[in-house]
Length: 177
Image (tube, rainbow, N blue to C red; front, side, top):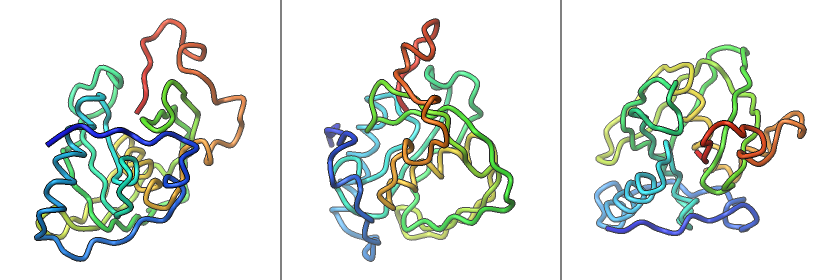
């Protein structure tokens, strides 16, 4: 397959609500997932949503294994999550720095639920039902926001905590999510 161009903030396609997947046994879904994996890995991302490559379907992928951009992040298993449903398990939220392949070179302090349950289907249509917390929960929320047409800057409470990575973190090699 191939790495795809990631749409950037300002493209109206990133602001649309994505459509559900109904056919899990299609060659189109297999190609989409391969393209998403290739794109995410080539850009050292920890997650990617189908709308970010111009496909308005409710599909996200994510994985964290010793990512140099997130050296302190716990591992997150490689996951294909289709037609996700997120349920916060408490009202507790925590602010954390996020970036995005669709908002290159920038970071923002974003509030997210600390603990949640996510449900959906994998690439074969099998049920996924997980309860997660910490960075895993943050990644899932960030990627699933893309399916609703929400980019992380829309969630920032104080715009003083949003800026270019190299300015905010001059002593780090900060990149995008």
